[in-house]
Structure formats: C-alpha cells, structure tokens
Length: 91
Image (tube, rainbow, N blue to C red; front, side, top):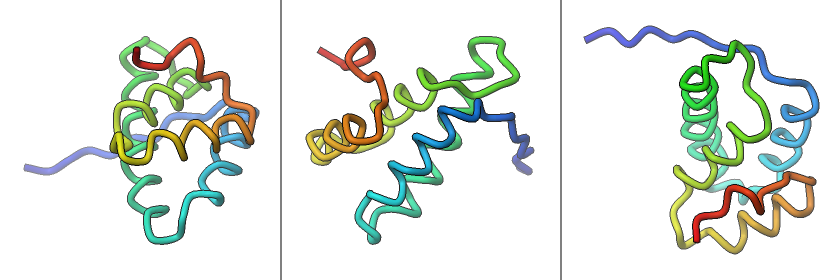
C-alpha cells in the first residue's frame, strides 16, 4: 500500500516553538520524535478541518505520541519554549 504524503502549512509562531523544542530533545530521540509528532500534528489539524497546523495540534501530538517515560522532560521543554500545554494535559 502506498502512503500519500501531504504537508500542511504550520502557523509561524507554533512552528517556531516546535522547532525550538525539537532542538532541546536529546539527540538520540530527536529524529523519531520529529517524525511521529509532525505526522500526528498534521493529522490533528486535518481532523479539525483545518489547512494549518496550530499550537494545540502540536501539543496534543506530543501528548499522544511521546512515551510516558519522557513526560516530565516533555513538560519542562514545553514550559521553556512557551507551549500552553495545561489545557491539554491528560489527567
């Protein structure tokens, strides 16, 4: 089966925060985190009916795709780069 790849536009402020966060992820995990989070963020935007990835799409992607073992690091990095994650945390 062939997977069709389509890329959405990313809101500039959200993209800047995302890129800033990605460079802070430990190198060993960085590339896989980028792959899964970018794919899920775009899927989240499409599910909302949007043509643009926005901050909530990215935050939700991190929460759903990053293993729980890295939760505290992820939260610290979100705080450092300014992602508003509190409304999306899984309780």
